[in-house]
Length: 120
Length: 120
DNA sequence: AGATTGTTTCCATATTTATAGAATAGTGGA
DNA sequence: TCCACTATTCTATAAATATGGAAACAATCT
Image (cartoon, rainbow over all chains, first blue to last red; front, side, top):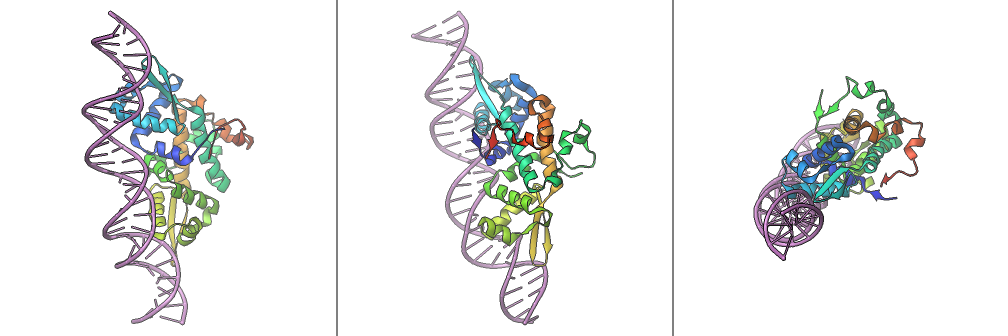
């Protein structure tokens, strides 16, 4: 079983460009996107994109495969779920009642609880 | 409704000392812990602890209140939940099927799925 | 082989973040 | 008021991260 430091995973998402790449790949789904398209979509220099994708891959949040001359990136589902699980379990372990996971399980309404603080 | 940048929140957790503080406060629960106890528990210089708690508070993950000469820190539940929700909803929005939130809602067995990759 | 396209690595530079000692500020007790 | 205690802010220094141009590497096509 591989283990990845959660600090590494959080760091990977702790930069605007990397978070943007991750979100973009989330939307792209299993088909993924190649480096060039990501770079032009996000207006990043090729070397800069490479720097960030490497970091995300290292953190286990995305993965790369070569397809001809292209390198196609996509979300690493297992790694992503591991991060979510870490956050939720760490929370649970301390105080299950505080985090209210039942909210995450609901039919959908729970995700849009109107009074809750949202990140943006 | 306050909004906090998710990058800021991820950054807050993207450092070993800050993650340690957060975890410690999670375990401490609503009663929280004062700065000195946190510092000695984690073997951090006072000024260093202050640097990190400030960051966590700014990210909306912990909050401070004064109690006599002490400053007591505790987890900011709302902010923490907002971060979890951001991660899970962002994920969902892209590909609900990939993340399998049903796992997070289960009775507990799901959180300990044996084959899954874990962060450490 | 040579040319073309796509991507990464190397490099130098700039910026941000981290650390801890020393000084400062707030609180409560003698 | 003066002193002890707690914690933060200031300051200087050290370390880690970010950026983009240029060179190198990889794959495909003619």
